[in-house]
Image 1 (cartoon, helix red, strand yellow):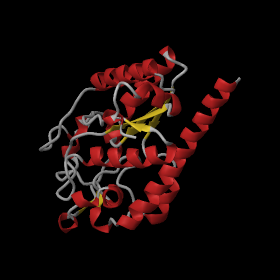
Image 2 (tube, rainbow, N blue to C red; image 1 turned 90 degrees about the horizontal axis):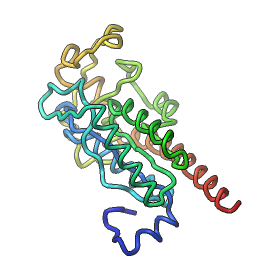
Image 3 (cartoon, rainbow, N blue to C red; image 1 turned 90 degrees about the vertical axis):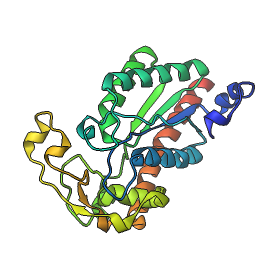
Image 4 (spheres, rainbow, N blue to C red; image 1 turned 60 degrees about the horizontal axis):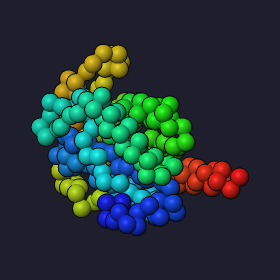
Length: 248
């Protein structure tokens, strides 16, 4: 259900029946020549809608800006600080508690947001332990990725505008992908980049970290459906625990 389309006269009763709110969180940043600046927003939004349908949850309006320090010097990128993102997420979580929500899902479409999401979740856990907070970034997808991936990762953690992320877009938001412009660009990222601040322009001029030409909708489907099942299981288990607590 789309939270912003509800009205104030009916929403309280609906929250009683649907205690989970899903917040899509993305970013605006360079994604090569074949993907739009809002790729992370489109992925988070489309994934959130599917997860909400499977868990009978509310989808909140997308938080469209993220921490993109690494790509902030590329054309089109918009960066916000970790501190600003943490405070925004904390405030949203606090509001959700007051409204009666018991589960807050921060569905992340941008890896750079991960530290802020984790810190916000910890602050909410400290102050509102009754609120179950999840920070999701494609959980449970590792094995599915290993099955479909044709090229090795250029980095142990990063994937960007590559075979994987382009496949996700082809499955979830294919209308925004131009495969005629997809490129193969696999940069060398040395260990030092993990040990000191390293803007991405030091190792890539395209913001593509892999062979995007190998992306397919079918690969995206296998990975996305796997992570959807993982997230659905976690949320449904949390809802059962909440219901059990109410009945005691």
